[in-house]
Length: 79
Image 1 (cartoon, rainbow, N blue to C red):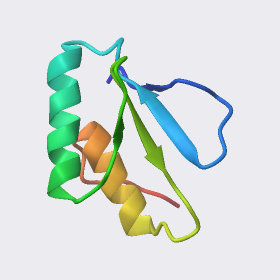
Image 2: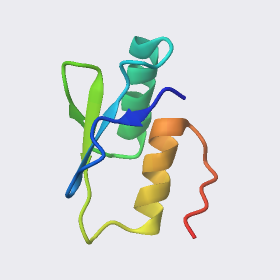
Image 3: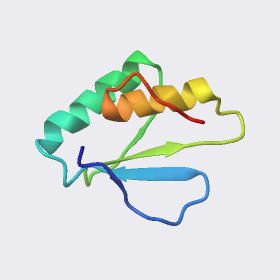
């Protein structure tokens, strides 16, 4: 899908790099559209990357929503 983490080291914030994705601008806009549909706030960076912060209140439903936001796939097995 062209998605990758900008760093393999992180605490509570993931930064997803979209700069290598095919049609990066379209992918970027589609992810932002889906995030808006699920009321998920993403930090928009100028280098075609997006940040998301997670904490102890995040549920399985939240994670499934995030997977859908970034992949467009509804089915996510978190077990």
